[in-house]
Image 1 (cartoon, rainbow, N blue to C red):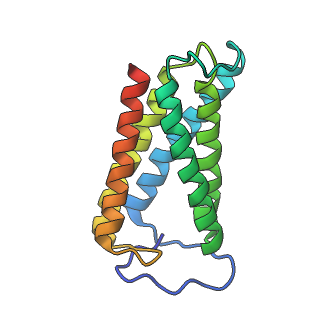
Image 2: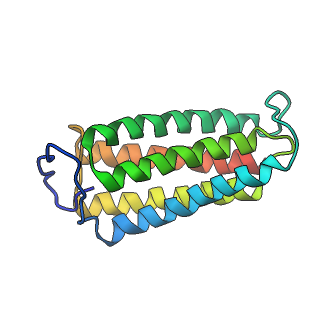
Image 3: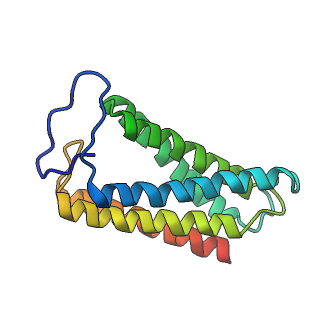
Length: 168
C-alpha cells in the first residue's frame, strides 16, 4: 500500500513498502485481530462436534463466508502479482483466517463469539481502510478513488451482514 495520491510504478521484483501510514497500519492490526479470532475459532471447534453443513444454524453465514473467502483468494493472487512482501504475507494470513473460520462455522455445534469478534474487527478494519483511502487517495489496478471507496464500503457491509447472520 502506498500513501501518496499517485501510485508509483511497481518494482520488478519482490519489495517492501514502508509508507503505509497510521491508518494503513491501524487497518492491518484490526484485521490481524480478526484473523487471530478466526484461527482460534477453528482450534476450539476441533474439540467440538463433527463437520455439519446441512441443518447448520449458521448456513447463511457460511455461504456468505464462502464468498468472502473466494475474495481472499482473489486478493492473494493480486498481491502475488504486485510482489509487495508485507501485503502478500497479509493476504496469506487473510486466506488462512477466512478458511479457518469457515471450517469452525461448519462444525456442529459451531462457535458464536469468535465469529462475531472476527466480523466486528474485520468491519472496523474496513471502516479504517475507508479513512486510509480518503487520506491517501490510493488506487490500484486502474480503479479510481471512487471505485476503491465504493468497493471497500460494499465489503464492510458484507461483514456487517455476516455479523448479523451469526447473531441470528
